[in-house]
Image (cartoon, rainbow, N blue to C red; front, side, top):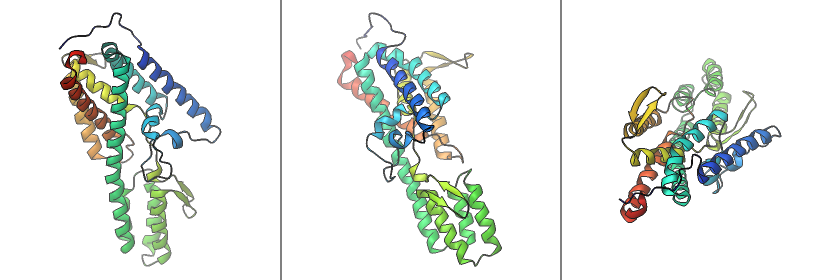
Length: 286
């Protein structure tokens, strides 16, 4: 391959710099608007396509939204650390295309996985309604309801267990599950449900994981220092991350709100695009 070397290495190149600025501004704006009762994530965060809050532009805008300062810091630090090197080699145009392709790919993979997960829950709910008993309610809680909401479900379960034949608790259980999935206010338990299907996904992690994969692909033998102490080649570092994300994604631990398959989707689309460029544009690929 013909190697391209920039005339001057930029510590903070154009695209990386502007991505960090835009992401930082939006976190600040989100924090300020929240004080006025406006949830910016409902407009710019990525929602599942059957959610009432879904909009097509969210496939892009969710990449600029973050849940908190630490979420923003770690994403932007990784973007600067690995992205700056790649942008200096490729130039701003190619790097920007790569970044957004990885981000869009991550969103598509995430929504696809959500489709399977929500489909399974909706099917379980339909089956439950056909045979709504206190025992079946307990099984539904154990299999499909995550903390901390499960505590409220268990309160209803405990009350129903005292009178298993009660049609009142049977109806309340179906209403509670409906509100848990699609949102609503439950007067009995005095709780407002945002709705599982209405929850937003935010963060540049999918695109950043694509950038991380590109670094490992282009510089496989470069040594990275884990916690600044332990040397590990980039290719093994990336492979380790893939294994961790796969394990975490399939484990689906209660309370884990990380979009692991979005991270894997970013890496997958990074690999596809890198291979495509390598085959079709060899002279300027690297």
